[in-house]
Length: 158
Image 1: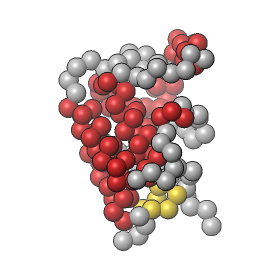
Image 2: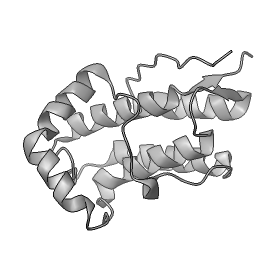
Image 3: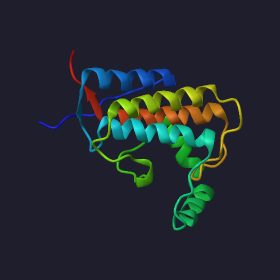
Image 4: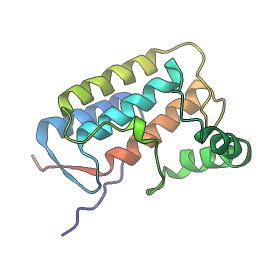
């Protein structure tokens, strides 16, 4: 029988970290393709980008990102904030750790990135897809992103 995704609604980054730590401590089933190490590592990477700067994406992506940012970026941002992120959208492979990595290390990295993001008081680096945003909007976007990926990991009953 296929595993169903869960419906998540995080109010804080602390809740995100607590959920990942619970999955680490008690185990989980997968409703998707990524393991906890991949999910936690991916989320940690994306939490760091608005604070530290976005990576240099391959040149081929820049025209696509620019076009999307100036045409649909703001609409997508509003939709993601209101409805969550849809499944099946591609992500940059360079932001996803390889499967089978140490989930303890990835969850610790997620915790550190969430702590740094929450404490950050400087400017938020503009998103290559959504453009400039304030900290509140950036936090809300990060929470929706975390809900999306963690929803594929279903906690084992305790």
